Image (tube, rainbow over all chains, first blue to last red; front, side, top):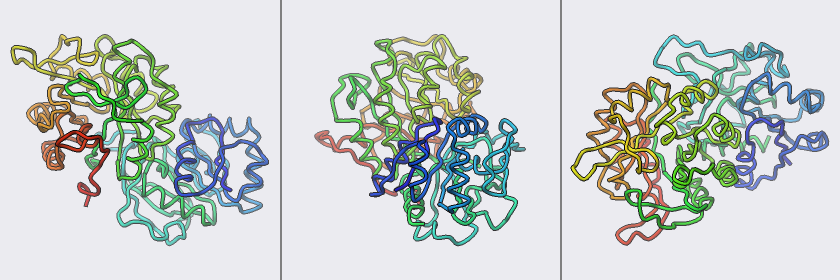
Length: 202
Length: 249
């Protein structure tokens, strides 16, 4: 069972629907028991970093997540804001995150005036290391991005894929079974399905 | 770095069902919207546009329940238009999982909404739609309110106005060509592409794959189409289709 953590930011239903389409059982929940009993977790999210952390604290999820992810080594996939929340700190609201990976979240400051922030639309990812997550995925895949902040990893080994938008940034990281994706697999049709499917096999 | 041109199927909502019109008239029922979204999930559709054709005419609010269901079912980004006339409505739509809002009627009197939405969600989440058609004397005018209220400004004036107001994208919709399979209005497309710097999505008249290619070559950032994906000609039997893999190598 995969638990999609519901902390009231955005609509996580498309993730559940995509998993169902793939024949994978999941539930959307903030219940501590549902998180503790899950085989793996997905931390979705669209919105402001500070608001996201506040919601996690309010729901008492910070300790639960620490226990499951750091102690019990349960695989977790953070998507978009969910990825950023896994980092140590964000410039958005200037506050500390969950800190599960040695990384921080910064704001795009692009030199090229033709490049708009947020970075929004389909873009390519160049994969930087081998991973079971990337098993038999399509060639030249593209993914849907919507974000104004990006993740910077301090450990090069954690970088799974990068994307170029005025600068290179981390499109996905993987540190053991802690995974972050800046793009939205649930809005990237078949390319996203491949990644979600591989995640549920971890 | 410019992103690749997008092919955008357009679904029209009317009385909670999925309809197709011809030149904004004669709505005919073509099916259940959720079913249509599921069919598009099977294809490589990079963006879906949902337009509720009742909202501005009836001055009604968006059908949030249906929109949430569509956003939850869609495995691709969804743009929604129809009755988006305040920041509160836009906020609610983004919260339901919509990625972009399409504005038309509200812009007749209020272009500041573009900036308001853009400030919170980014300019690229705001699509300004220009509907246009020829009058009896062959003069092309822009219209609001599902083609019923003529605009005071010319089409280029509106395009410039929306760009200055902060729109992330223009949707250029030729009402006369809608559902006609007569090809896109490339003349208008070229004119607008030459005067604005924001992406222009062309709509109305798509009939075949070569229409997409031609529009992209003439500067379109996106190509919207309804009938072409919905009907099987020559008898216009309902067949939701989407050519696979034809555009991207």
